[in-house]
Amino acid sequence: MTATDAATPPVAATPATAAAWAVAEAMVMGNGCALTVVDADLAVAEGALALTRRLDALWSRFRHDSDITALNLAEGEPRRVDPLTCLLIGEMREAHRRTDGDFDPTLLPTLVAEGYAASRVEPGLTTWLPLTAQAGGDLDGIRIDGDVVTLPRGTTLDPGGIGKGLAADLAVAYALEHGATGALAQFGGDILATGAPPDGDAWRIGVEDPFRPGEHCDVLRVLHGAVATSSTRRLRWNGTDGGEVHHLLDPRAGGSIRTDVQTVTVIAGTGARAESLTKPGFLRPVAEYLAWLPTQDAAALVITADGTMHTTANWSDFR
Image 1 (spheres, rainbow, N blue to C red):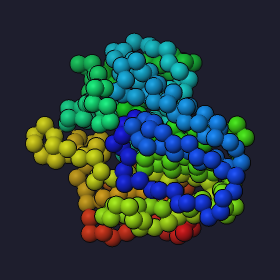
Image 2: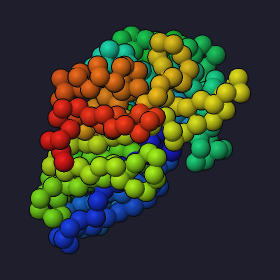
Image 3: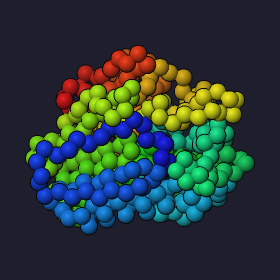
Image 4: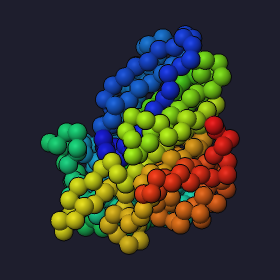
């Protein structure tokens, strides 16, 4: 997971009252991360963040000793991995099916070819890929037998945003399992909130205006769920042809998605699900996307280049 898949991030609003809560903060997965726990001490929040550091060590495409790098370099040979890596791959395949291929975690060769091989946070860490790697890999051909995973030759994986979303899911689950009655995880552009909020009402989450950094364009009230934002504005660089590119890739046309959509914010039941459901918002006509998303038990806000805010019919349920 990189520091850069964080879009213009939603920001958790300050609790209205000081119930028994604690916050741990750290740089994790290339992002500034915060974990708030209710009715639990700081050690629980720090334990949840420690879990996410372990996930980063397992899933980072920039770390040469990670499970993901081992799988990407395996050239079709089986590799034994952590069970949490198997869970991540299962989420990837489910997200690919859910979005009819709009979410595709096998586009890493294109991303590297366009110039995004090194970590933006730790430039000394670089993605390694075999010569056989090809964008548009065979997700259905991945074999998982217990903790042994075999990727088809040429298929490589990029945890990207879905890894960050799943990490938020697991961090919050850890906090609840260790006694917290409520928890909120904020990892860059991903937020997951569940259980009792500090003010006893709802978790209040502000969505940052992509045109006015530091200001909110909307504030949400979430009892349980995730809020994820992806953006074409945050991570941009000059590609191999000299033109400006960004990290959101078109799985069919190749290269950066060409769209006037600036940000897509999705509310869904889990961080992994919310992350994957942002991607179709950049690929489909806005009206079509907004009509489809509630069928996935999710809501969305799409902001286009002219500053117009487009929302699903159920977005108002969270205001």
